[in-house]
Image (cartoon, rainbow, N blue to C red; front, top):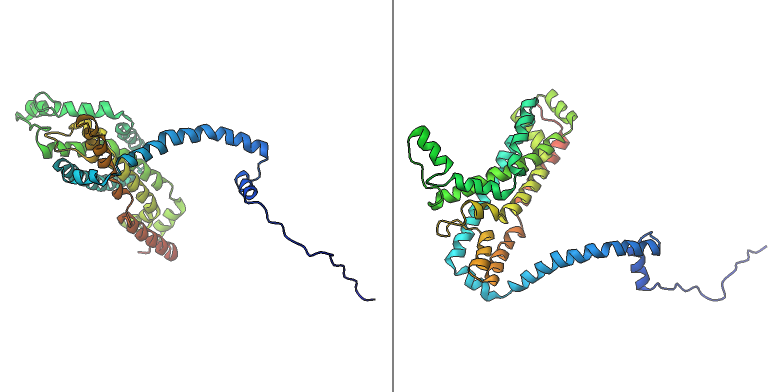
Length: 319
């Protein structure tokens, strides 16, 4: 018997869905309509706060600093040129010194023993202290007439200490050392957490193959915490570039406005010189540092990734 094939009297036509329904289903996911309405209702206040206190101030600041004439006036101001130079030195020196010290100290605090744990608790105290009283205390310690440091030099060694805050390079050096004292524990704790997360079997395998000391650090420890080192460097760069408290409370931008950085100069333009647009332009001029086309740290990340790949393929180093 011949096969009987049933065919539809009319050709089947696929009905296209409305774009609105497709978007709604994509946003709602597997939630029913009622639960999606409650979820949206709970998100609306947070979205409003985000728009009011994040998006609007940033957009308004960009609008205030959008006039090219502001930047021509800004670049012609010697005060801005000095502050930009100070910012480059401040960020470049403190970041590199901070990260190298944090890398070394994280290895120190990895040593066993209760003494190192107690020292770590003391070490993180500057990071936990409020910035205002800490930096104001440093400011009064550096007072040239009755400060703690100069009194100590006179009582112990019988010499007159320098006027720390009235010489530009001494004041700027005091600012950088104060920043290192306050911010170093943060980077150290991050790298310490990275060291503690290294699997013990990798370390034991490297020790069996004879890797100790510098070989262990170069071929095992640093490749495994390299990405964390990069993240800590980027975070530290952001925090240091926007650091206002250290300069403001330790040196106040003095002597003669010689220690200002962009973060403090922008506030000076707004409050002291009554030029809010210039202050916003000074702050926005630091954005190219944070959004470069090819940041040098990206090259460091590529080198770290290549090192980790070679280490993973070849296994622990052999001596």
